[in-house]
Structure formats: C-alpha cells, structure tokens
Image 1 (cartoon, one colour):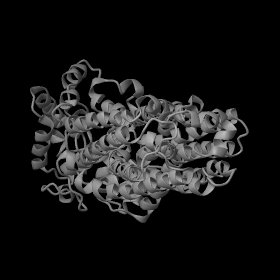
Image 2: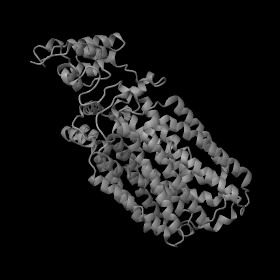
Image 3: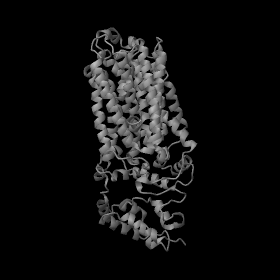
Image 4: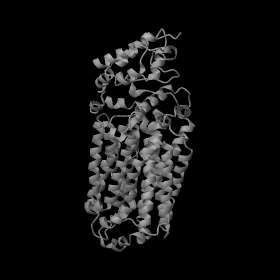
Amino acid sequence: MTKIDFGAVGDLLSVCQGENSVNSLLAYEAVTSWNSYSSVAAPWALDFHTCRNRARPRALMPSRILLHLFRPEQQPRNGTMAGGGVVAAPSGKQYEGRVTLFVAMACIVAASGGLIFGYDIGISGGVTSMDSFLGKFFPSIVRHRRDRNNYCRYDNQGLQIFTSSLYLAGLVATFFASWTTRNWGRRPSMLIGGISFLIGAILNAAAQNLAMLIIGRIMLGIGVGFGNQTVPLYLSEMAPTKLRGALNIMFQMATTLGILAASLINYGTGRVNWGWRLSLGLAAVPASILTLGGLLLPETPNNLIERSRLSEGRAILERIRGTPNVDAEYDDIVLASEQSKAVQHPFRNLFRRQYAPQLSVALLIPFFQQLTGINAIMFYAPVIFRTIGFGNDASLYSAVITGAVNVVATSVSIATVDRYGRKILFYEGGIQMLIAQILIGVILKYKLPLDTNAELGKGWAAAVVVLICVYVAAFAWSWGPLGWLVPSEVFPLEIRSAAQSVTVGTNFLFTFVIGQAFLTMLCHFRWGIFLFFAGWVLIMTLYVAFFLPETKNTPIEEMSYVWKNHWFWKRYVVDGNYANDLEKHENGKL
C-alpha cells in the first residue's frame, strides 16, 4: 500500500497558502479534498486541479506534487530533485540535462536563419553605392549627385523604397507566421521562410526593371518575416536554461556573419559591371540553409506538447537534454501548454493587464533597437563613407571592417551573457554607443564642409571609421543580440507566438521607417542625425535600468516570477484572480 509523506502535506500547505485568506481557504480545500489515489492517503490526498487552478502553488507542478506526496524516497526533502536537478526558488529553478551534440547542431542550423536577415542588411548598402546598379534603376541619382552637398547626394525616395520595402513585407508576414508557428510548428515556418527568400533572391538577381526588383524584395521580406518570427523562439525552446542566452545569441551571430559576408561579396563584385546581380543572387545560399533546416530539424518539445503530441515531445526533450530525467522540465511545459490551450485569442489576451510587462518588452525593445541607428549605419554604410569623402572601393572596404567588428563583438556577448547577465551588457553598450555617436556628430559638424565637392580630411575620416567601429561593437554585444534574446524568453507559452509576432512586427515597422527616412533625415539633419540617435540611446538605457528585470538563469516557463518580483511590474502580474476563481468555484462554474 502506498505510504504518504505527511511532512510533504505540510510543505504543500505552506506553498499553497500564500499570504492572504483567500489562498489559505483554497489551500485548505485543496489538501482536505477526498480522492481515491490511495485508501490510506485519501483523506489527505491533494485535489491537484483545485490546487493548481485556485491556490496556484509557486514551486510545485501537479505531477511533482504527486511524487512529493506518494514517492518520498525519490523526492528528497532538501529541495533536490531525483536525478540531481535542483528545485530552487522559482526564479532560480534548475532543470537536469546538458548540452548535447544534437541540440548544438540543431541550434547552429536554426540560427543560420539569421544569415538571411544579416545578408540582406549588408547587401543593400553595398549595391546601392554601385554606379552600375544606380545607373540601371536610379539614374537620377547618378546625374545629380555632383550637384548636391555631401549629406544629400543619395536622398532619393525610390532608392529608400528598394531598401525598406523588404521590411514592410516582413511586417505583414510575421502575423501570418504567428499562426503557422503556433498551429503547424516552428519547422514549417522556417521552411516557408527559406523558400520565400530563395524566390526573392532569384527575382532580384534576374531583375530587368524596378517593379521586378521590388517584387523580389517583397518575397525576401516574407522570408525574413517568417524566419525572424520562428528562429528566436526555436532557439529559446531548444536551449538548456543555463545556456539559453548564448545559444539564442547564435541568431545574432549568424546575422552579423551574414552582414560580413555581404560586405566582402560587395567588395569583390563592386568592380564588375554586373556585380550587383551576383551580390543579390547569392542570397540564395543562406535561403537554402534555412530551407534545409525546415526539412531536417526536429520540432521543439514545447510546440509538440502544445499540439498534444506528448510522447513525441517528451522523446525530443530527453534527446536534446541527453537524459531521461526530464520530469521537472516536462511537467512545466505540460502545465504551460494546458494554460496555452485555454487561451482562444492570444492577440486579444496579450493586451490584458497581467501581460503588461511582456507587452512593454514586445513593443519597446525592438522599437529601441532600431532607434540605436544601427540599421541606418548597416544599410547605408558604404553610402555614409562615400558621403564623408571615401571612394567607392574605400567605402566598401570600410563596410567590411565594420562588419568584421560586428562579428567579433557578438562573440563577446555569447561568452558573457549567461555569466554576467543581460542588463550589464545593456548598460555598457548603451554608454559606449552614446559617447561614440556624440563624437561622430561633433567631428562632422566642425570638419565636414557642406560644399558639393568637399571631403573630410584623412585623419578625421579615419577617426570617424574608428568611432563607427566602436559604436558597432557596443551594439553587437548589447542591443543587437539582446534585442532578440530578451523578448523571446520572457513570454509565457499561451501568448508566446502572438507576442513574438508583435516583437518582430514592431522591429520591421521601425526598420521600414528608418530605412525609408534615413537618407532624407541625413540630408536635413546632417551631422545632427547622430545626436538624434544618441538621445534615444540615453532614453533606452534608462528604460533598461528602471523597467527591465534580469532574466539570466531563469527557466523560460518560470519567467513570470521575475515580473512578480519587479518593483514596478509586480502590481500588474500579482495573482489577483483568486477571489473570482473561488466565487466561480462555489457557484459550480469551475
């Protein structure tokens, strides 16, 4: 006959009771409910549904409560799970497992989805500075370039539409990607993204007129929209908690590698009259990698469980963690899945009060990421360098340098994000970007004349390149990777896909705005454009300091406790549904 650990019942009462009378009443009801798990244990058995949905214990999931009560020999009282995993405070819970070769390879292939995003960012600025490309699609720029001052040489709405149309398409695509990601899985969304990007690359390489070029950009945008919606979620759900930051940042690393590869290709093809076709067409390479990933990668256990494929989900979880002892993590995913299924309208629920912290992240992090000015620099780096007096080859070469700095600095983030946390990188990167942008603005104000043929002196031009590299490095180990990592890890499963769509959509919206407006802003703001972005960097650093909690080492399905302990957001996420739940229960509605 099964024995019961009566001490565990006391533990459970203390967990379930909480700090108010409603919780105490519900905990009493939960523990004294009559069940038939065991004839001896029945008077003290736990009505798990009642405790979970009313009393809401903070540390024990339903099946682990069952183990805790009826299998004390496998569930030590010192807080250690059987098999070695540690149950700490909710925000510090540790799951058992290790980084297996299987999960490492899956994350590497999935992260290559960032290549398509990075390649496009890097390739756009290069081809828009090539005279052969401009002469075919934007001849007015070539005709009037010598008649304009340094800041206005490339101010052309058509050229900006070429760059920004991709992100407008991505904005629309990400909301379709939310539905496919939730209902079909992460892999099919990656597959759709890869195929769309592949079609776009072919159209761009073969473009004969501006309309064909823009259609190709729209297809690229659909691919980027699906990829950016899916890949960060995939990495967050596959990665072990302790290394979730580092593995997720592989998406940003792939993005920076894509930018560097594009800059190198532009440097090589810029001397060939048809080189722009090769630059645009080689986008098919990262598109093919993402397509293969969609075909070959395993689905995440979170999504399989969410779609009621429990045995498959557990099998994948055991495989990626390298151990059969995954009860703790599996139970948390199952519970999160049950809560997710109860949500019929995730986009509508995203705007409920209890999700205010997550909504702020979904909106403000990508908004701020774009207002660092990084994509303005990366989109138009060769154009900017030509603006300050560099020749075509020199401007492309300088873009290669900044691309290399981007890659190296991102590796710093991978090495430090799970050791020192997210916020310290935000702080350091913000201060460094702020100083670099102010100095660039000051140099351009006093050393770059407005004359049509004026150039920046070689020494000052070199100083600007160095400062841009300092700025790019700061972004690459802070807002670059963390702008994707933090939103992907803070959303509960029931709104995760919808919230990720809002994050990606916001990112694309303001990428579109910056891409469409930057050359015009440069023409009118001149050197002040760098001070404009510096002001926003100051604002976003203050936001991180006061409103963004640290998420290091917190399991993705336990992230709600981070918000409950935050000085500001706890007023929104504190459990305020107990009284209503009790009233409904007494009326027979629960």
